[in-house]
Image (cartoon, rainbow, N blue to C red; front, side, top):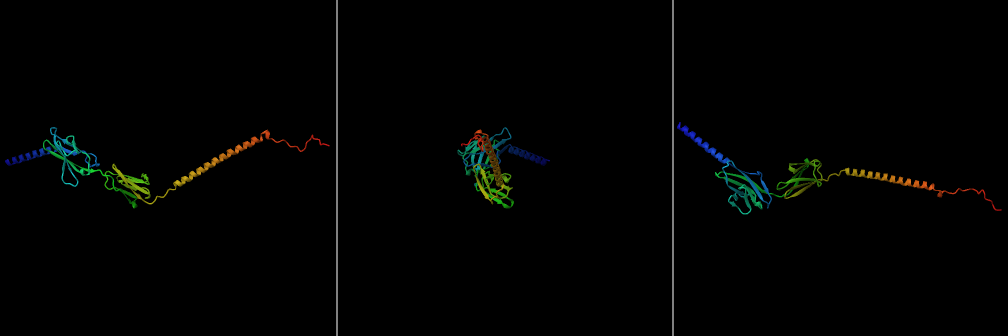
Length: 281
């Protein structure tokens, strides 16, 4: 019976310690507001922000440490510490250590940033965020699958690329083809002919590449339209010429009619002989 009592007492204390550890570990949480990798343009400001939560209203944060680990370096470097330490003029912490700002971002500032928060009871929680340099667009190329009439646009390592397609310098429409795979693939609805240009851009600039196929056959629609327009112009010219001729012809008839009715233009009657004339003897 004594052994059973000691065993139950041991289990009781183990359960109490476990509950205390779980409660203490769950009372503090740290997480980055942006869970995705962060991209920063060289020379701009890197801003990282975390949310620090405490379950107990009586608890408080006593220390926040920001550390940086470069991509090719296994060691971590403390870049800022709240409330006492800051590494130089480029780094500043705000909002009780929850916000870290690094000015004049450089390529060497890329890597992983770890923030560790400690509460008054000694609990610690950490969160990590990956930071990359925002890269310009480089080395654009266009590949073609002739059998399937599909064009693929490729770009080397630019950040957040946007793809645009042009055919004979005009933006591609649904009549030309369908754009898939975030814009990098073009499935043609027309024969593979002419010039196809892929333009890749981001906020640092753009670059392009062109695929040149066989020349497209010229449509006869333009020639037919030109012929119809020429016929209409000839018909209109004929109608106008006819109306002008009728007007001139009517004017000449009217002038002849007026001239024939004028008394001054009438001729004296001619006699074959003078009835009352006497010959001289």
